[in-house]
Length: 168
Image (cartoon, rainbow, N blue to C red; front, side, top):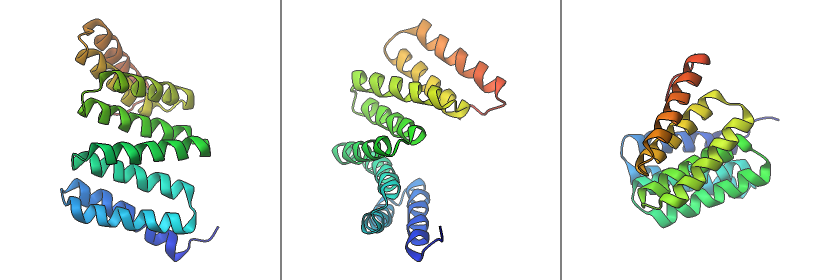
């Protein structure tokens, strides 16, 4: 399929929003991400809507607007599930686990993290699995399960070494 101007604009806006978010210009990043979401909605691009919502979820988390972040992540996850995109569903769940930890909802963090790791394993993505195992180790540590934390973190290192993968 040929790339359209709208598709190129959407891509430029979302990646500019990610970059500008990374340097701490949250209001500018939000404007760009909102514009990207509008383009995706106008185009009825379900993947685009899901991705823009994921970007907005990250941004809203950084801005401490946790209800808005959660809403964007839920939308993103629902769309990725509907589209059958397990890889991006795992990523959305990992983001939701981070958000749950930020608001000290350990039960939700554990649930999202476990589901994310399960999806990373099902798609066979070594980097995703190292990310998921690392998060599982952190979750165990936060809950005082030090043997569990060690087990997950050791598996992370072994997997990373086997796959010549970085840990982050």
